[in-house]
Amino acid sequence: MPTAVGAIRREPVEAFLNDCEDRGLAPATRAQRYRSLQQFWKWLVDEGEVHESPMAKMRPPLVP
Image (cartoon, rainbow, N blue to C red; front, side, top):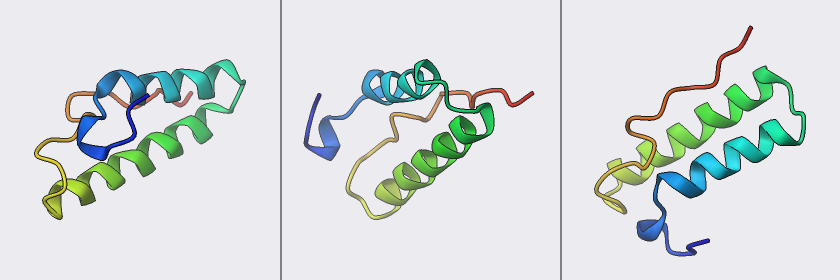
């Protein structure tokens, strides 16, 4: 796993979200974690820390 923010790509973010599902977290909890990460990456882009969010084309988890 990369440790520098600029080196993080889509795959580690997807792996984290998949791990949340594998651990049996509720769909609403997984969706909240997705939204939190999305806002974090948006903030990093706004601050100029990264050029593009690795979540730019990701779709949120479905909540039944």
